[in-house]
Length: 142
Image (cartoon, rainbow, N blue to C red; front, top):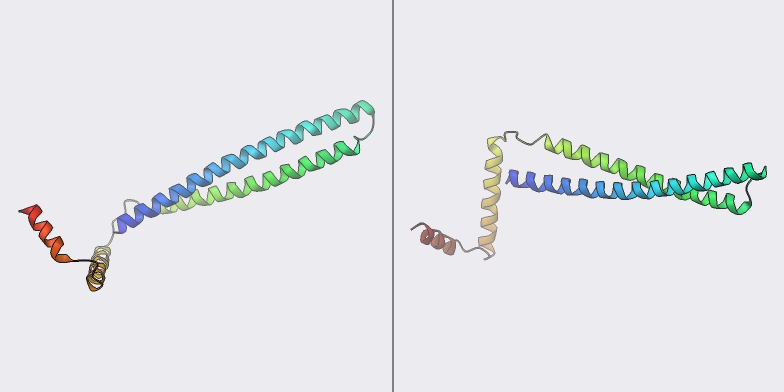
């Protein structure tokens, strides 16, 4: 039972890590695109300033400002996704440390106590009929 729970938790953590990695890659691509667009417009503005000897016009400066804001939003989202991915990787490493450890005997006792309690509750509410299970096992064995 403990091994089953460990397997379920491990698979859930791996799923969350892969999901965070996909989001990280997607957000990183958005950031790189926004950064490239900002650099391109910034270079155009600088070339315009050099060519005409004065600052760029109002429209070009506003466009540059808007692209800078988009770049910074994308960068913030990318850093947040990067932190989340690092946290998920750290959680997975922490959980993987338990792999291969020997479990104390009491965990088996706890598992059996839990199983017997489930059987008692199932019989109490009429969901579980042990006579049919015993008959099917007897027919399977003999």
